[in-house]
Length: 216
Image (cartoon, rainbow, N blue to C red; front, top):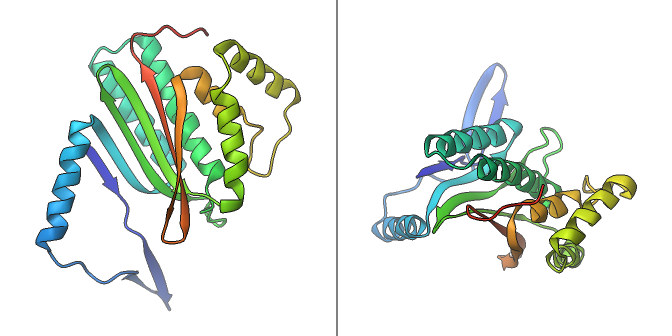
């Protein structure tokens, strides 16, 4: 399992000196805390999770994940079609995460979030979590349900129509991302909106089955 966690910190500049300052005080080793961490680790392993990333998503981070995942699937002699679908879905989902997050940092165009990749019982699955504006939940739910209620043929027609007629929204897309994710994955797009300490999180999970043939 690969676990990548980028801690949030701020850099203070004073004259020509650079001082690293943590936002939170240093952590002491705590038995209960480590028990929870190890319990979570066991649960991740049990569910087939192979990659966990918490932090800022940049083009370099996305490239690292896609290249590493492609390398591992090629080593395991995964079907070329499955590798292509997983790669395509991975890129689209991470881009979708940026479109719907409230955590854009305009200076660097970065977004913070959680990303997990796993495989269990012949099924690859990808999960993301990021903060979302509460005012966007109804619109996003409607878009997800529209995609989930469509057949593969309807999704292909929706995709072509959006390419021809879609208008770019202020979130950087015309729904092409969600439609394309649904076209390349299996089953419905699973999602949750979870409020935590006054902040709303958007959770998305998709599956790619090894056995299924996908109409191109």
